[in-house]
Length: 255
Length: 236
Ligand SMILES: Nc1ncnc2c1ncn2[C@@H]1O[C@H](COP(=O)(O)OP(=O)(O)O)[C@@H](O)[C@H]1O
Ligand SMILES: [Mg+2]
Image 1 (tube, each protein chain N blue to C red):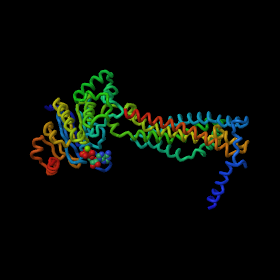
Image 2 (image 1 turned 90 degrees about the horizontal axis):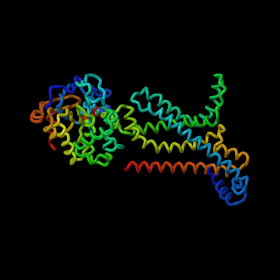
Image 3 (image 1 turned 180 degrees about the vertical axis):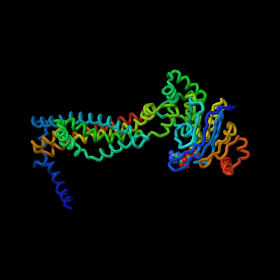
Image 4 (image 1 turned 135 degrees about the vertical axis):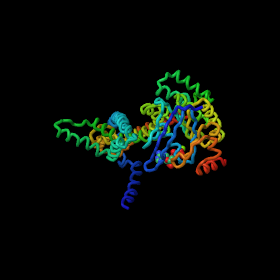
């Protein structure tokens, strides 16, 4: 009840705020026609570099780790499968934020107790944590992609004399890749969004910069609106890329 | 004509899927050049038997001896199992190039020879999905032949085909039989069996119930189960 009332109160506030000059919205803070506004915009947009670099390196690492987790997970032998299963279940269950805290604040304590004086660099701490967290999902994408190729294909490969490696390389993976690429590209969108959490350990990417500016300018509404717009643009561009990839693969398919 | 030389000896073969006894004490010897047709009701273990022979299934007791240790066993599946991402030609050359170490030119020459043999040389550069079912199965047969098998196994090669395409596949198989290839064929095509088989094998519930020449087999089956099966299958 109370929540609903609040909403009703907030709605006219928001609408009138836009139209009036009463100060609900104060776009001056990011008005490119003023020197300070322009400086603020530049400061915010400069986060793109870090967010993109962070996401790309983390995604590449995640794709690599995922491969090493997925390969044993398709074994016939349950004891070979088990470690992969455990890895996926455990990593997938840990939320990213606690994992980041653990790596950034917890891990150095362990290093210290071992007599090592290692502090974690926010950039690499964030990349590695993101990559590990995401690798559970990429591993599952690989596994289901490979397993979606019918058992008859493996059997046919065997009857024409191919060994395991050859079967994978020439028969299974070329077919699996079509089912792996689109979800893998989708997963990249998640990494980009999750990279916002890197802000809490001091990584100066998009979100961190927005937070810092809010502290000095007291204009959370405008600054966070722009922040959301920044992610929206980034993700939409990736989405277009994914669509293009899918269309291209469909076109190849029908050749 | 089959020789007296054994190609495959199966003795006391037993196979379980968990606690389901799928093959019970199978004894069967196949001579070189012999054409054996295996029939029996669905679920009787025909596929399991030939899959044990070429190692696609493991067995729990008994022995399968390939007399020549180099024996190459080819297999033709009910669902063709062609490689969909490769052209017909690539389907045929993959094994010879990767497993036998042949050069591309040699493998392609051999592939072409067998495509002519199955009467579809003009389809070499197409992807399997652009071929009819009958053509796909003939490609699958050519793919097996490219590995120079001593024994060729067929698991209901015409069961997934539209009726009008069955004959073209059986014709190719009859042709192969005429060349003295050792063949084990699981099929319900009794016309083909009459024409081609040296020996009939009837299976039911994981056992070989009876074997015999096609002549005895079709005119006076010994067991009741076999008689019943033949009546059902010859009705249409
Ligand atoms: N992979 C498997 N796991 C468990 N049971 C199986 C498996 N494959 C076959 N079977 C069982 O073994 C029996 C024989 O199967 P199959 O050899 O395919 O029969 P057929 O080819 O004569 O129709 C059937 O009852 C079938 O359900
Ligand atoms: Mg079968």
